[in-house]
Amino acid sequence: MKLKNKIILFLGVLSIVVINSCVKDKGPVPTTQTTLSSSCDTIGVTYTNSISLIMTTYCNSGGNCHSNTNGFAPYNYTTYAGVFANMNTGTNGIYYRVFIEPTTSSLHMPSSASTGPTSLTACDAAKLKAWIDAGGPQ
Image: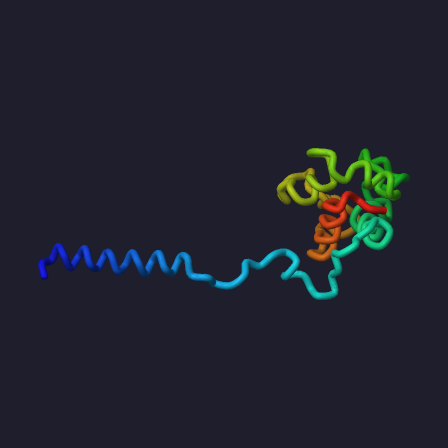
C-alpha cells in the first residue's frame, strides 16, 4: 500500500474515532435540581412558605438594605406586595439582580454590603427562581 493511501486510511479511522467519541452518550446532563440536596423542595414555593424567610435572611433583617425602616435601598421587601411588585421588573428586578447581574457588579444581590449573608444558598436560589417562574404566588 502506498504511503498516501496509508495516510488517508489513518486519517479516516482517526476521524471516525473522534466523531464517535463526540456523539457517544455520556449520561444525563446535570441540572440545578439534581445538584440540590433532597431536602430542598422547590415544588409549590409561595411567599408565605419560603420567600418571606429568604427576604428576611438576605434582604431586610437587622436593618438590611430593603427594610421599611432603613431607606438605604429604594425597595421595601418586608411585605408580599413589596417583593411581588419588584420580582421581575427588568434590570432593577429581583430576578435580574440575583440571577443575571454579574457577581462582580455592585448591583448583584445580595449585596456585599449586606449585614446578612452575601450570597444565597443553592436551595434558596432555586426556591426564589421557582417562585418567580410560577408568577409569585402568595
